[in-house]
Image (cartoon, rainbow, N blue to C red; front, top):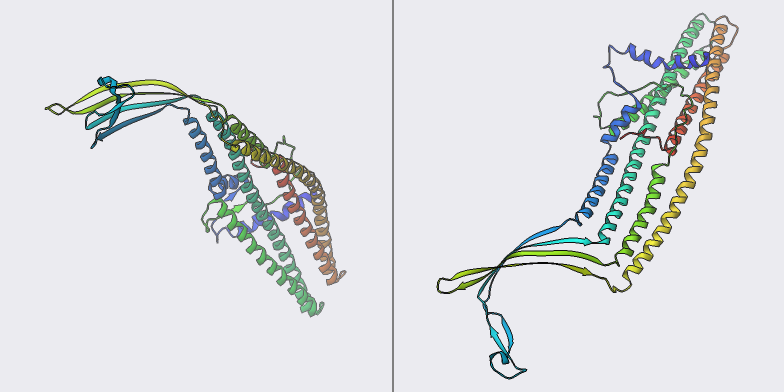
Length: 444
């Protein structure tokens, strides 16, 4: 417990230093990881493009369903014959010999047709299977959307944790810089009293300058990571942003694992190929369509008054279409889809095997990182006690500057070990959340 409190006290220096600069800088809003992920899922281009892909798939389902609705069409046709149409009538009709035909021109120069045509699919297995294929494609688009959202959440979480780690590293550097400057002041006083060598002062000054350079580099890296977070969250480049200070995470509670979006998309690819094969095979089945027509046909001009006479026309019926032979096109397409189905099954099995291997590795990495983090906390606390004790001994002349530098170096090595273990633990926990399908935490 004491070691954990020691680490947390070191990490809290960032908040203390922030409060000291409150009068000089505008307060930066602290955003949690969940808030950042929610903003990124709304503004990131990949997530938005995946949303559009899903809506396109839904529109295709609606399009296929609309094929089963009745079709109604109005037709208006106006014709003027420059030459009236001919018709052959038997000559016997006019008292002539059998087997002889006589051409007759009859009709009016102008013909007007006004009618309404209706068509209704009664039995159309191909259209129904087309709807099933579109629905399978819609489910696949939904899983691909979830995978895109997981990629956005994973990338943002990595950037967020990187910002936390850099902030913790900056806190350690600030603490080390304060300790080094304190030692430098003590050694400068000893050097003024001829109790320390000038090389000792120069060594501590070099160490101070190195720490300042490292701090500047960490600050620049932290600003770059915050720029990436702003970009993914849709914030302006100059928007103030701060992350929650890093803390030693505990082992996460085991949540109910589920298949990842990648594995479910691979499985859905298999189902989509199966639906496409059924569609091709059932396209050989007959289809039955009902149809009807109602309207008027006009003839004219008639008589001296050039009138037009309209006569009603209406009918309804049904048409049965039976595909008899279309070569071997359907057979070849079915064969091609069966090969695609076999390939999709192999890819699905490969994804399952790879994710199982990655899950076992991530579990081991998490356990190792937790142990390493606990050891690093104890080492940092021990190194801090040794440095304080060595500093007192050096003040009393019982320890050399070399002992003091070595004690300070041990503290920095323990801090670096803590940072590295924290990074590895965050990476392992993120990977486990992805492989367990819980990375989005049931976000809509």
